[in-house]
Image 1 (cartoon, rainbow, N blue to C red):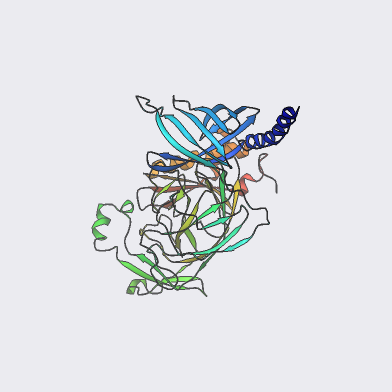
Image 2 (image 1 turned 45 degrees about the vertical axis):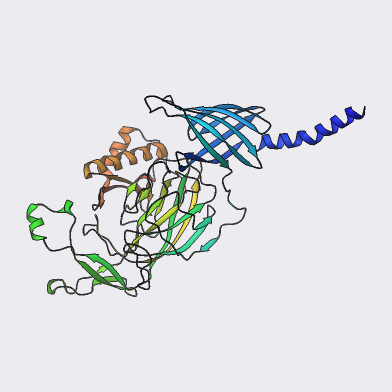
Length: 439
């Protein structure tokens, strides 16, 4: 009888621990895989029904079992790849190995890889707050490996500053190597791959009285005759910024250019999120579905940027501020300067367009960033097509009619490997449609 009572008591003590361990398996996990010596971040989502688990490992559908703290599952993709996982859950952390079969490899040889998994940081339970952040380090890659400068919640506002494209700050001090150094990265707690990061540019203010540009012209803007005449140009030009009047003028104009000035229109040339760790991280002058050096001159106050999240926390970067820029950034540099910046961040969970989308106060904006203007024209058109179809319920023939009557195409940026083209649709033209969101 004593043995029976002891056994019952032992079971009463042990069973809650087992149940607790099993309950902790379900949910979202950040997986760090030792991918042939390179730490690579994957995502794991698990659902549990008794001893059965289902879910996905970075998009690969999985089924398996959990027994106590022992976890077994097999994940498969659609091209013959798989991950056969054996792991243990100890103190809220999963540790184990997987046999990885890459479906793109002709031999499909299994590779044994070690991994760990932890819960993603969830947003703190508090009202939105404003963060004052003084950057001390700047980065020239949209990399997932750079340590977060600051953790923020969805709904929070970040007030900070950027340095110019040459690495010079508001006091004229070099703080980083040239090449569009970025402020950040900012880790948005709760952001996971498959989400959309929403960045609202609330405030941009010039913080010094000079900007740097050049007197050259991008090769895409020259024919043979113009190229001959442009020989010897491309030299630095300093511009004076009159912050009280809101204008900019060349510091030492030639006789024919004296009296020339332009209104300042502060903008962020670069804004993007970290890419997946498996390919090399793109530099701060690159563009892609992560955003990057888009140099669209309407990326100013009141503009909202939607970025697809590729890694936990999103890791938001921004920089390369311009006091003003004409369409195309044809000199290769705009009026490059440092800037005081305030942005608000938010999340759309579980939904991603897979590409950058932009919304100004007056327009929906799709951007193409391909190797030629033709390709970028197609990319911007296709991106907007998907947007109008998904959000407004429009049929292809409907979208064609909107393009034919309301589309506004503009060249956004020409320097570098990509030639940017944006497609703008006035929101006023869409506001009366049955599928329009009501205020």
